Image (cartoon, rainbow, N blue to C red; front, top):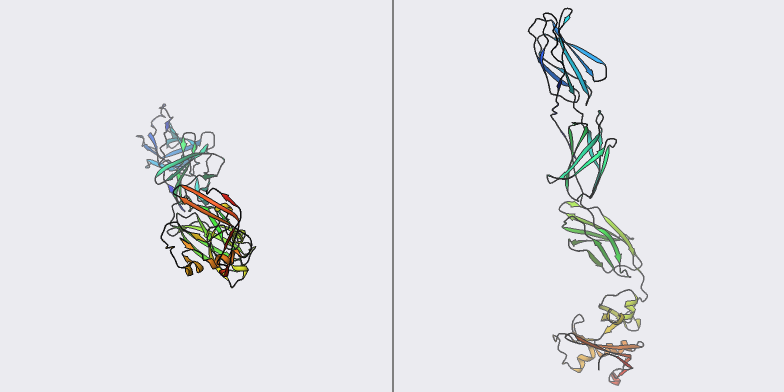
Length: 427
């Protein structure tokens, strides 16, 4: 943080109080007293030398209601600087020429010393949107302080701070921004010099980092982006056993689904935004993956009960045998989900004019058009009681047929189909 003290030339009006009085016999007074270089603790007085001979000058100066001090000045001097004065104080100054026991009529004037300025202006506790300003007060009494906040050479705010305060809390600042703060004190018509401090707010962090849709193998991590324009995010997730992975995510991302997690394991997520070499504060959250109800799911409904609620390709295990896994497409959204899809035709890219052997083993792409295969369908249907659902769509029109029972005979029975009662919208 940079602190700069601004030198201020204080122009103070002086009031000539001495009026021409009858001069002592043979002695004229100094003439045309003027003030210059008025600071908080000094003032320079200049004058024109009298015509009559004299030995020295005597200058006395007095607070408006206080003690009188005096100083002897050589006769060949025509200016003098009074120092060690009090700031923001009115002084009455008298100057006489002295010859032996005689003194001239005094030349008189009055002057206000300048205010001393606040010092040690510092920005503390700087956050992306706030900072605490603190300073040391001037010696002189003040009425109040004036604080000006600037960024990009544009004044954004001006604050009037009470005289007894020595700090001010700034809020509503912009992250990753350089600010300049100027502070001066006032006392009646007087203003002090200005002290300036510069500080930079850090980048703000992402907000509301949370983990939802957590199951035994995955979790959805989401957040709100920072105000600052960023280049990317750095996301780290770490398990209790110390295993750790780090991902670099695009600036536009506000969520990511973590897959392949371990069951019943606590994970700590740490997220940080980055722009160039700047990084935000780290935000974190924790979550624990669940355990599966079914270690070897035998259908899509059991995958759904395991908390896997996204449609896609899953492995099911015939009769829960770990050695007999079959990949299937699970529809987790239609009619409460949990459906094994054994045929999909939607774009005509797959040839369904096939040999009997193809229909026995299956063909196509599970992510597109496919037939699962009679052997697979028969084995799955033989595991228990199943329903059959057929969805059909033509343009914007769609219908479905649902049968409350479904089974398929084996190869020896030529895969004989048995279905139960119908309901649906297809006629």
